[in-house]
Length: 170
Length: 145
Image (tube, rainbow over all chains, first blue to last red):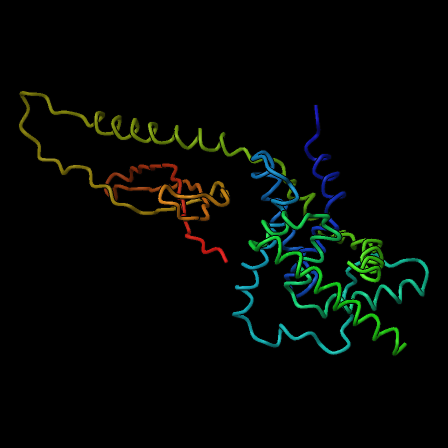
């Protein structure tokens, strides 16, 4: 008989990183993103897993809604909590490569991604690391596939400009 | 898409998203997100209702009656007063999006509670507890962009 405990662990270990990356696009810090991921994942695994449909799609949607709810609760808090202190270390979005020069490049790319407008970042993450089609992204974000494709293209173009500028300034 | 963008796309794809923290994995392991035993909880709570009803009947039927030849005795009828009311959330579910018969898109969630009310008779100190499950369905209209 299948052990459900092991099964969720395997599932989470395969998809957790990309789900967390997506959660981080709609939350203010890693701790919030992990809270959102925990809530969405537990709800999915307990209640939604057997409903049919595409599991990752359900989870991406659930994470987004949970993050929006959390954001609404937190907007009531004082502004000082929202402002990240200058120089405060930011937890990396991606794993650090062993090669120091590759790691430096990773940091530059991360900064460029974080400078993108949220709506473009969301599409970029779903497309590249979530491996979703534009149709799937459109359904999840409640936009048209053309809008999803445009946002993706704008994101890539903006990233290219930022990375070129970063390369020029060394 | 031009070649530069394709190159950028493949550079981005090569980045591996960071792993969730050990703390999150530990929290999940403690929660053990396996399916809840909601059905069992509901079966139990449905049993509570007839049990409470039977208890009430038994209590009132057990009130002793005076012999017919005895002098009539004036007794106050048992006065039960509610002393506590609790509700416990047993389960909550997100049904996702649905469409009403008139075509309105809605988001539907449901929560299942067990409501428990306790009455006490201050004179006899007898108490009566009544538990009943309640399902609350929320339908929130959704506006699509």
